[in-house]
Length: 139
Image 1: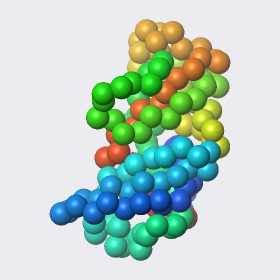
Image 2 (image 1 turned 120 degrees about the vertical axis):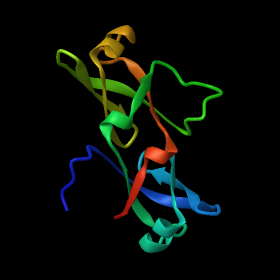
Image 3 (image 1 turned 90 degrees about the vertical axis):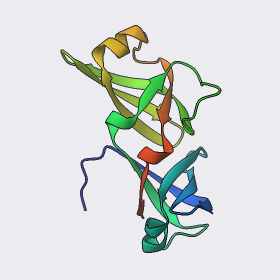
């Protein structure tokens, strides 16, 4: 299946913490970073997830925010450090490609945000992704 979601990060489930209706699923990405997904318990069952399961974390580029340094005391679970490899700016929006250990992530942000952050090729950034915005697919 081909998807329009640009960010497709392969990884392995390292832990599942079930709740009443939702579960948090910890994933170790290929570059060694940890990622958390918050998905329904039904999805955990339907996907047959358990520790050691191979998965692909899917994140729309519009759901990837950027910071120029790690942020403490924030509810966003996923902070992936990386380096800007390309910026394509239009009249209103910018697409920022980021190299992370073991892969890459794309973020779609406003052109104004890219300017305010002073982004350019080679800039150090942190990709911020809410766990509720991470979908999982079995690999």
